Every structure is written in C-alpha cells, then in structure tokens.
Image (cartoon, rainbow, N blue to C red):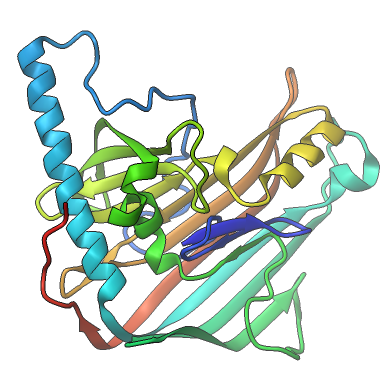
Length: 309
C-alpha cells in the first residue's frame, strides 16, 4: 500500500507508499490515539538494560513474530478476493493561513467535503483492481456533479489500503528493513505487540516506514501508524511548513477492524496535516477520515501455506 501527497494535500496508495485509508469500527476518530513519530533505534535487539537471557528471549520473540507476519503477508498477497463495501470519506481543509499569510490568524476558511463510494475490489489470478462508483459527492456543502470515476479527494488519496502490511512486513522487504518490538498495546478490542519497521540506512524503498500492531497468535495486522518522514509527497508539506515558519506534523493511522477467513480488512483511516509553532496554537490544515463499512464478501480464499525463510 502507498501514500503520497497531492498538490493540495497528501496521497497514500496500496503497494506504493503512502497516505490514506478507511473507516469505522470500534473507536471513533476522536478516540483513536495520534501517532508520535520519533527517531527510533532500528536495531532488532532488546534494550541494553536487559540481561543477556532477557535479550535472548526478546530476540526469539521477535524472530517468531516476524515469521508469523511473513506468513500472514504471504496469505494476504496471494489471496483470491472479491468483495464490496461502502467507502465514506470526510475531509476538512482550512485554507486561511495560505490566503492571509498570518500563521497566528484566528480566522478560518474551512472547506468541508464528503465522498460516498460503492467500493469493489477483485483479485483473481492476474487481475487486481479496485472500482469506485460514486454515490454522493459534496464539495464544500454543495452536491457536486461527478464527471469521472475514481477518487476525487483534495487533501489525501488512498488506494489499495488493504495491502498496507505487505510493504511494511512482507518477506520480499525483509532484507531492506530493520525491525524492533516497541511495546504492547490494546487496539480494536485485542491485545497486540507493536512492531517497528524501518528501511535500513542506505537502502531505498518505495514503501513508507511505520509501526504495526500485531496479533501475536497469528501475525495478523490490526493497525498501522505511518512515519510522516517517509510519506510520498512529504516534501510538499515541508515546503508549506517553511512558508508558515512552522514545523510540520503529519499523522496517518490505518485500522484493520474487520476479519474474514483469517485476513484483516480496513475499517478506519485518519490523516491529519498539522503545523506547530512555538507559542502558537497548533494549526490543523487538513483532516481526512475514511471509513469502510457494510462489507459483503463473495470470495476470500488463501492459497496453501508455504514456508517463509
């Protein structure tokens, strides 16, 4: 899956990197925690404060977890899929600072947009496609006439979000990445291990970094928080931040709250474009929430398990 910034905002796509995903399941946008991106130690070893035996146990746990996630990603990548759902996207974009040039301005010029799509995904043999049939498009509170198919969002674009885990944790990406267990947490009603995945220094990657919330029993991915510095198009956000003389903060979170035949399907995705300046209130320029709901599954079939090295 991938994510990338558009000329008005940011974009995230399936097996390419970055920014935009889903909707509705336990937890509303207001209760979903915001990611906090820091420069992390990307080693696959335990903390130096652990004893030798504790480090060994931690490393064995990491190895087992990586094996399970590799198998899960293999099943996801090779599954025959045919399903439909409702994709509901809401976005609020505040253009006031760009128009006034005053970061401290209290004025708001907020464009509120709503997009409702009948979403279908098919993957059979060599065919892989997602189709969106617009049901309703509201641009700044006004019903819009749709002249072309596909996503019409202004701030962020997300495609093939179902495959977000593959670029982050899949077997083919393993040689390029460092992994570390960053903690444990509860998400969408389940206990999870937080697995940090970062591209190794000097390695190039076409998928962004992030932290994944993993169900340890089977390696399935419950949630991903994407690293802002690796989002496609983030340079545009940095340029806007320089014009504001502020620091950018992109947060993007995908939850996989639906499960069918051992595979997880997206439920909620939230992306915020925020700018910070000392002594000033944070300026939220754009907020996009995507919900996937009302799933109807016709085919969800995984190929036989294989051994992942």
